Amino acid sequence: MQALVHKLLKKDHFGEILSISDVDGRSILRDASCASRGVGPVARWLLGREARALAALGKLDAVPRLLDRQARSLRRSYVDGDVMYRIRPQDPAYFKLAAKLLRGMHRLGVVHNDLAKEANWLVSPEGTPALIDFQLAWYRPARGRLFRILAREDLRHLLKHKRTYCPASLTRREMDILDKPALISRIWMATGKKLYLLITRGILRWEERDGAEERQ
Image 1: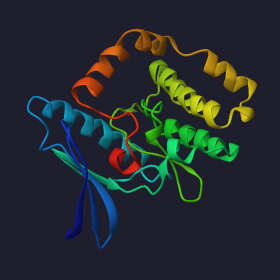
Image 2: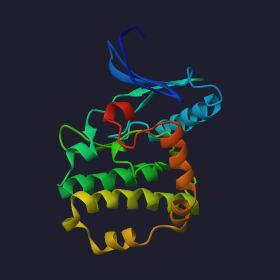
Image 3: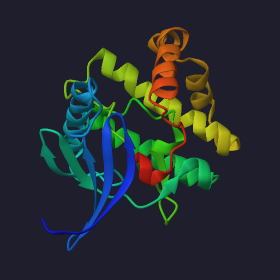
Image 4: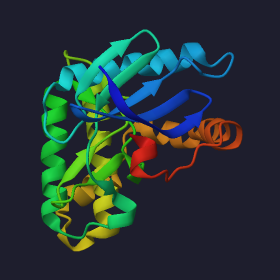
């Protein structure tokens, strides 16, 4: 591939994210070869999770396509759109399509595991939903009990955003899901999330609301 333009979108302890424009169009390269000392194994593990998830999703609409996977890098298609917190979607149709997107993803054996972040939800130029940032995604074709619990949490996080931007369209069943987080989620909120925030915000200086390009 002969790249015409390389643009650095983000650099952190886990490596670099670059936008690549060539004769085939635009794509996103996540490069872990320049990860900070001691973080490299984690960065490569995250690349592996993302690669497995994207490969399983294939050409599912509204998610990136896996284009190339190397030992320390991953290249995937660019998804056009802006982040949810900037667009603030208030059309019930957006959330209906978003729920359909989740069902399609779950049927293919993938849970996202990071949908509480509005920056992982995009609104396309046509007003439709898309998902990015599959580093924490889990591919489990057997879809056992834990998978079903995590899939429900994917949906619950979507409904939290729906409650923020389009509360009048919430159904009784959706409100029941919002009121009943899974036990694993309650344990995470009480224990693991504090350590996660300490590491990601205090040490790694991650921003919760990076822009769409930075989170690609």
